[in-house]
Amino acid sequence: MSLLGIAGSLRKQSNSLAVLNAMFAEMPEDVSTNRFDLHEIPLYDADLNTPASVSALKNAIERSSGLVVVSSEYNWGIPGVLKNAIDWASRPGYASVLKGKPVLVVTQTAGALGGARAHQQIRETFASTLSRVTPCLPVLISAVANKVKDGKFVDDATRAICRDAISELLLEVRLLANRL
Ligand SMILES: Cc1cc2nc3c(=O)[nH]c(=O)nc-3n(C[C@H](O)[C@H](O)[C@H](O)COP(=O)(O)O)c2cc1C
Image: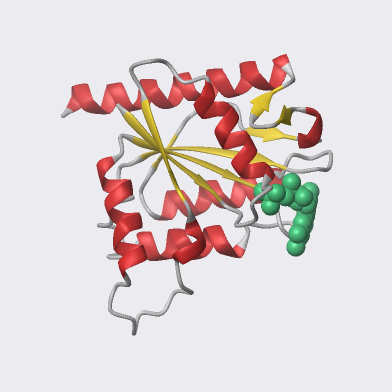
């Protein structure tokens, strides 16, 4: 089983990336992990002949058993960097590599709400791509600086919530594999 992690932020010190690293650091031994960096993904333009970076993103999604998408909230919504990448990956519509793909959505913010509004928008976006959004309690990490440090969890409650969510994602992957 292999999970692909996508952080919806480009900066080196991204809290989204820190959360992703903390989650992947505690993965069961039989699960491999990869991260896809969105730096090279251009703005969506249907006139472009599928850029190499977009092909790489689509291939990485296709090869993975499931996605872990960790994002912040920007201005009460989904950050453009992440939405743009999903838009690229979503083509051809309703028949893309995202169709049927198990996806765990995690949001984090410095503030108190944990990105609840962006979280809902990201879930809806993955509904539009016919992805299988993991049925679990929404993982909303508030005051993220107190929960993750140097790519490791420093808060047991957050660690437990993320571990449970990953278990649900892996269950979804297994259920899907058994169905096929
Ligand atoms: C342009 C911008 C808009 C933001 N809007 C919100 C917001 O609407 N709600 C919120 O809780 N935090 C907001 N924040 C704070 C970020 O969610 C927070 O700093 C987050 O941890 C950044 O994640 P990152 O390090 O992965 O980019 C905003 C930050 C930026 C840069």
